[in-house]
Length: 237
Ligand code: TMP
Image (cartoon, rainbow, N blue to C red; front, side, top):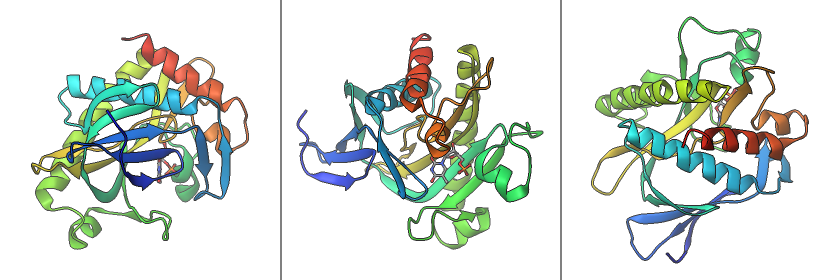
């Protein structure tokens, strides 16, 4: 499968068109950024771990009945996906309080809410992805009511599938971000990857952070943490 023109030249992810106009190749680099790309570094083999984790998660979700854009892994750093027209909205699921929620509401990190919390963000680099609610999403025309309901149903399904799988391998799925899009035939799918770049993973026994927070907060051993998530998830395959 040849990589053709570049469609999205991101730092940690690049998307290429293929000879099939409905399919794209998503390539994972070793670059990592934080704080709206102000902080940057290269983490050896990060692209391999992120692509591996993303592919395994996509397979688990598809087996569990969640439609995604994923077709198959084609190399250690590349996956073949259906081309999607992505909705400019992020959906965040929080099983444990951390990150911006802890800061915004002054709640201690680690607190377990009575039920998972769902946030929506409007995707805009210039505005730093501001938080919105259902009314904004509908009023701004980002989604229609039917798609919004389906997005919540699918998001809950993603969490219901992944949370117990990660618990089985000794990891708490603290929070994660996903995006959705429409395929050429109009189907709504999850059109995103879940990796230690886009989710928080905490070791159940030690409480160690196994995700991008290690980089954000200069804790070191970033590659090792990503490899731990990759190795543990691999053990269920
Ligand atoms: P937050 O604590 O910064 O709101 O992030 C919550 C989770 O969502 C965390 O796992 C990181 C992920 N996330 C992204 O991957 N991209 C984003 O643009 C945002 C806002 C969050």
